[in-house]
Each structure stands twice: as C-alpha cells, then as structure tokens.
Length: 449
Image 1: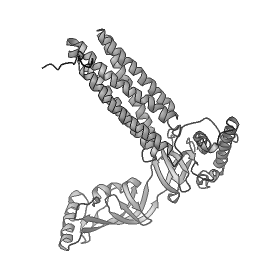
Image 2: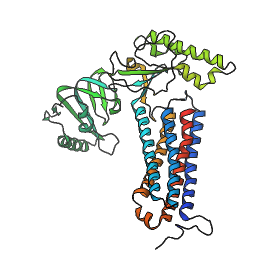
Image 3: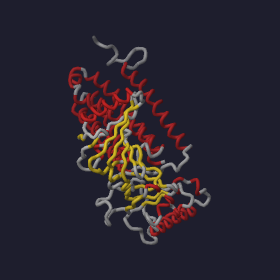
Image 4: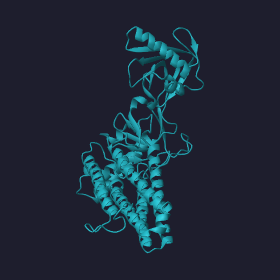
C-alpha cells in the first residue's frame, strides 16, 4: 500500500506529510528548549552565590560551533545534490555531515571528561579551592574487627549486604569471621545467606522488627573507602552503605588536593582566606593573591571610573578567583598573568612531587564543608549546563543516526525513488538545522556571557 503525499505536496497545504510533521515536532522542541533557556536566565538573575562566568573552554566551544555550522551547509548540499541526481556528491556531503556530528560529540566528551576530573572544595570560611585529587579522596580505618549488621524484617531502603558493601573495601585478603555462636566462617554470599535466614527466624519468633548479626574478624583489618561508599564515620566507627557499622580507629581522612585556583568571592576579607593558612598555601601565595586582586581592581577603576566595582561579575572573577599556574608563588609583579578559565589546567604528571604543575595541599576534614567535581552536584550553573548540553547532545546523536541511515541503509530508495529520499533528507536536514540553531544560542549563553 502506498502512503499518499510522501513525495508530492498535499493540495490543501502545499506540503508533503513529513514536512508538516517535522514542523509540528520542531514547534514542540522550541517550547522545550525555550523553557530551559528561560529557566537558566531566571536562575542566573536570582543566584545567591557568585555565578560562574567564563569557566568553560571557549576555544573548544567555538570549534564545535564552526563544526555544526559546516555540517548545516553540507546537509543542504547533500539535499541539493540529490535533487540534481548527483548521487556521488550527495554521498560525500552526507558523509561529511555525519563526520562533523562525530567531531562535535568527541569534543564534547573531552569537555565533560575535564569536568569530571576537576574538583572544587569549599572551606569553612567560604573559600573555594579548585584542583585535582591525585589519589582520590579516601577515608582510612585501622584495627577494624567488629561488624554489626541489621536486617529489617520488612522492605527497607537499607538492608545488610556486607559481601557487596564491606568486603570490597577491606585492604588485602579478607580474614575469616566468627559469629556470636563461635562458628568461624569465610564470609561470602552463601554463608551470609545462611546467617541471615537464621537471624531473621529468631527475630520473627521474638516479634522484633529487625534482626541483628554480629561478626568479629579473626584478625583486625584495614578499611579504605571513598566518602560515596559509606554513610558516615566518627573517630571510632564507620557506617557502610548497607547500614553495617564497624568499630576501629580513624587513621586518615585528609584530602590531598593539587590546587589550581583559589576562589575568595564568598569570603568577607579575601586576603584572610583560610586557603592562605600556614598549613596550606601560606603567606607567599597570599601576597601573590593580594597583588593580583589589587592589580585588577586598579585597572578596572582606571578603565571604568563610573562603574560600580561590586556589580561587575567579571571583575569579581578576575580579582578574587586567583589562578595558580605553577607549584611555587610567582615573583613580585608577576602575579597577574594571562586569564584562564576555571578548568584551564589538566592534572599534573607526577602528582604530589616538587615538579608538579600546581602546589599540593593536604586539607583537614574539619576545614572542609563540601566538595564535588564540576558536575550538577557542584552548583546550579553546572546542573543546568549539563541539562542543556546533555539534551542537545542527545539531539545531535539522534539526528546523526537518522542521516547515517539515509546514507548507508537507504540505497534501494536512492536507486528507485530518489525524489522520495530527497524529501526524507530535507526533513532530516530541517531537524539538523534546529540542532545547530540551539547550539548557536547555547554557545554565547553558557560560554561567553
């Protein structure tokens, strides 16, 4: 059965069916992205913290802009060559369009990777230190021997599962464990399931709401865990994600950070930031920070004598977000170098040694209030950045797959009904132009403003 108006236009609208459909679909897409753009603007206007400005890699964003614009040109050329029945040139232009989509997504993956590897640590006085964690952030416990497990008799979000949540965090080979009855076991799924069934049976007979199991390691063990792998800890106890608690001694919970930036915009007296404590960056870096701050303020006052310094987001960023470009403080008069984004530096090779590209500090837990990589968890800006660019990236992938299908798997239609294929390419091209247009808005909104 032939579907009408797939090649020729409808008499009532002057358009074939697919073209009407794509315009209706694009109208819904405009409402979707329009709402997201509006949300971004309102969140930025009402932000109660220094909104990130010029944090993204403008060069990479510009390259992606050029790539998408070029792909919009080639997809039009592919359609035109198909209408002219120049099938070879059609294939070449369509292939270039798909390749441009791949280049765009590759560049975007590089940008995302940099953000996942880059961290911001908020100190108790409001200072933000940015940099890289050369060894990750780990909590270490020594002399852990006693484990207490709780098994609810009803469905619960937290349920003891030491095989999955405790054993992987033990350094070295896990020892054997003794039960309360004195039985010595090798903890695995089978042995724990038997313990679990017995404990649940006893708890049910006693009308308790949960069952308890106590296990004692035959030899003390060491626990090394990322904060995301545990619920919490004190000096003597650690609670795992399954609710299991263990007793021992806190050995280390300090964070080793290679610092590439000091953001003092949230500190009342920026020169007294905790970052410049003698335990961390110290007095020499403090002097470099003050020199950089005063230089930018003086330059702003000279260039814009009538403007309010406190209302300039760019000045606040330049003056109070100090970039560290070396492992040692710059000499006097050299503290105000070139501008770099918050993620301008890749992790240094040879982390922690004297030849690292940035100074390394060991932050005490009591001085840390929050830390995160540059992902939606960090702040509202990165939450909406990943939402907008991630959703746009999905549109790029979907559009590229459709165009690739026309190129690689629609050969029969190309030979037998090229006019129909031209209509399909035109519809795909309209979607591709929309994807390009969205990025034309995203680039200045996120990267330049």
